[in-house]
Each structure stands twice: as C-alpha cells, then as structure tokens.
Length: 326
Image (cartoon, rainbow, N blue to C red; front, side, top):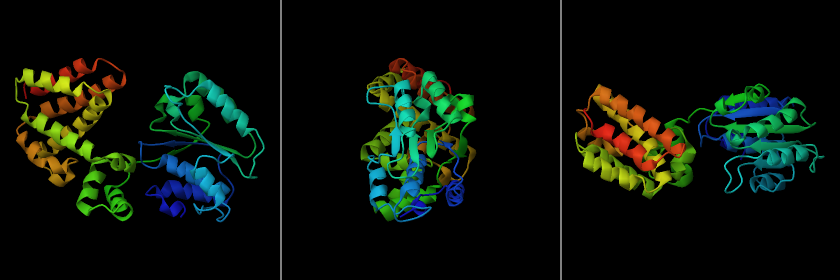
C-alpha cells in the first residue's frame, strides 16, 4: 500500500512526495476539487506517510500508526468536520483544534489537522483559524479540504498552499470498479460515466439510484409540449424528498448535456446516460435553444433546492419550462 494506490492526481502526489522527501512540507494546504475525487484520501495518506512506522516518505497502511489514522483514533491526527445535526463547523471546534495542535506530539511526529469540508467554517471560525495559519505551532500541519475555494476568506486562502484536484478519468474509475469491486466491465463503465469524474459518486450509485434515473428519463422523454397537468403531477412526486429533488436536478443537467450532444450530431459515446439512449432519442427533435434553457434552469433549480426554497414550486417552474414551447 502507499501513495501508488491512490487513483489519479499524479502531479499533486508528486508535489507532496517531493516535499516529504526534502522535509519541506508547507505548514498549511488547501485541497480543492469536486467531491469524491480523493482529496480526503490524499490528506489521510499524507498523515500516514508522516507517521508510518514501516515506510519513510510513504505509508504501509498496516502498521499500528497507519491503522490508528485509518480508524480515526490517532492522538496526533484529527479530522474536523461538521457535528451531527449542525450546519457549520463552529468556532469552538476550531479553538479546540488549535489547542491540540500546540500540545506536544505523542508519537514524536507532526500534529495533523484535516478540516473537511472547510467551506462549512463560518466567518467567525475562519477568522479564528487565521491566527494558527499566521503563527503555526512547530511541527504542525493543517489541511483544508473544499469543493471550491470561493466560500473561504481571501486571507485564509492566501496562507495555504493550494493543490487542485480535478475529476478522475472515466477509464481509471471503471478499472478500479472492475479490479477492486469485481464489477462487470459494462456496469463499471456505466457507473464511471455517471460519476462524472468522482469515484465517490460512482461507488454511491446503487440499484435504487439507477432505477430513479430510468424513471426520470422516461418522464422527461414522455412529457409533451403543453402537458402542464403531467408536469404538475411529476413535480408533486419529486417534491416529496429534498434529497431526491436535488438529485433530480443534478441528474437533469446531464440529461440536457446528452440531448445537446444528440442535437448537434456528436458521437453518442460522449453521452453520460448511455443506458437511456432510447429515451434521449425520443426528444431528438428538441431545439438547441430549448435544451440550453432547460439545462440552465436545472442548474438554477438545484441552487434553489440547496437554499431550501419551496420544492414543489421550484420543480413546477422547471417542468413548466420543459413542456413549454420547444
């Protein structure tokens, strides 16, 4: 085991391994990129490489130090995340973390704190964290993990060394699913495509999620122009669950991406929803303007659901646009 087991991100891993080898790690890093691509796995791997009892500059994943880090009970490595039933990482959590970073290391290695996701730090928590970033305790390492750096204060970002993590290639995800999860190649390729570069998303895609997509694809492909009653009924069904409504809008963006590919005559292999091609082709006559408008409305709908606007109204507004003039 070791850094070689991490999927993708060759350049980012090389930067970290080189810094480890030269003992020149920065005191604070900001790992940015989409969810599920390996940011936290890389952060924990770096922590293991700092403490591993077997490998210098890498990690074995088997020794007591590595096992404790993987089990989240290592005294010198702490992951700070949002507490159950809370919406933010509190200033109290930050202060406790800062206090622990100033304690003497139990193992003699670095004290490591991983904040995931850092975007849940409220403004007061971020300001409290600035002191630690400006005056880091000796032999400490802070890693902030975020899908986007935009929600973090500029003063916070400027004191971290930023490493960007992009989506993983589909082929790498599919290969992992075949070799490690023993999936059939066709199933692995479908999940890798649906994951859109996120191994985490691909792994979370279960049979129920796949069936929901098929239902949604059938619904959108059969809604006809002017069928506002059908749109209202569909909105009512989708509005029952906030998570499902959000999942629908995120998926709908891929649906209209695929429709655009069909409308422009590009290779169907570039579609995300390869298993739903028959449903996509039912809407092949949809105008490009209507497709682009629906895609933008789907993205807007997802933002509104995240802001906890009325789900039924948001879904009706989107689906009324779908059955409007195409």
